[in-house]
Length: 388
Image (cartoon, rainbow, N blue to C red; front, top):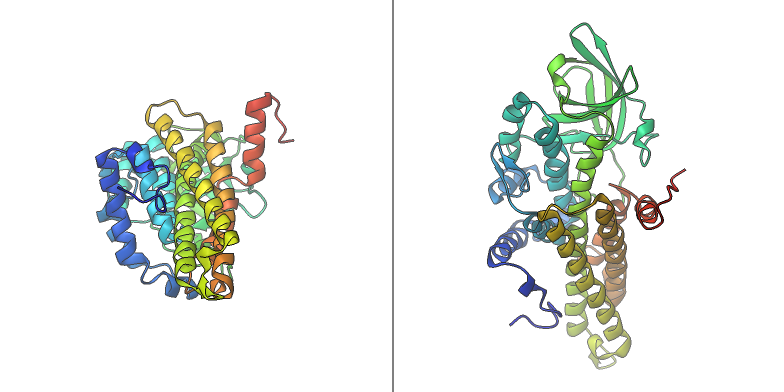
């Protein structure tokens, strides 16, 4: 039987044996391949490309997609994988999200048969890397104001513009770039990153997501064949549907960072003595640990219910905002509180909570800020649009 310290409400009983087996497989991978090295990778601002093929073999790249070499697992299974990956580091889960929820989802749902055949099998296997170019220097929460353009020149498309905070762009083989056509319609384009005029430059001096890659992308007279356009979508519904896939994984992943931080604080409190007794024996320390357990268990329940709705085909985008807003916000609070239990030692990379808290500042911002998801929920409960 699972102890109350590890799973207070026996949430494991809500999962099937198959779901738990997948979770345990990903957890073992993170324990063996990520946790022994993550402090070094984080301090060096290094993303370990050598694990990409291993992630493919693990079956977590595009794992919620079907066909073309994709695993075709359930939404709940994908969520459990995201939770375990982010217990290692947000940068690891972000790689899986950019690859699968963003780039692969766009190609799978909106691409031509040629796009799918050419890119998806290699991406699922970790042999090819993809990125997703939506955000711009002046268009973050308001992608409709993007300035990147796509114009026709005979049989070709020509892309010009700038993108910012594009995960994996400098190591990607293919980019899904969103641009505004001459008639003002936003379209998606499949762009091999070897195309002349495509340049990706990693963003330096980050205080968050250091074991991850985010880039500035310049598009200067990038010429593409007519078939480069994603044929099955126009407008922002395309990128927004991909963002919702990523937001779904985030609500699970944030609970992984929170769980790892809680466990680090609990273990430290049991081992560290002050005034002749363990830190865990003090009332204030117990209050901190209990508050972490409360929000951690509730957050997993939120993610699980959202996943069950998704698997049943009944999930609404507004419900994804609930989980993204709540779980990331509460995860940051858990990680910060966990650091206080560890005290001064907690500001070093010997302990995970402050690393997780720093990473989650990025997670809190990307795929919709707190403010954006608050207004999405506000519109849902009042029927009034308050974005402008």
